[in-house]
Length: 63
Image (tube, rainbow, N blue to C red; front, side):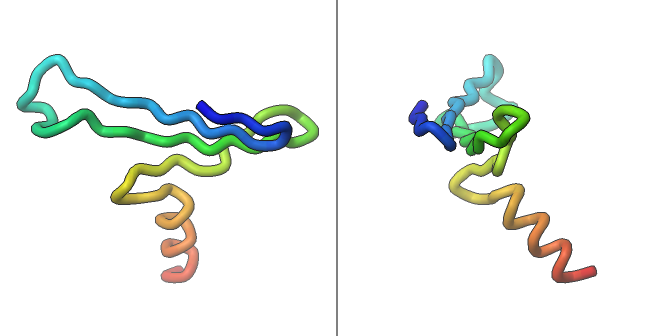
């Protein structure tokens, strides 16, 4: 985890008990947070392959 006064990043390694669920190394999901007046908010959820922000941006362009 890394943290600044107005932002933080948390990387979570997902390990599955049954290998057939996801072969290969554990997946890493990264949560980006920003501090706003009301408190901490999730700014993005991402992996090496995808980003929620990118998916939503693309969806808005396509509509």
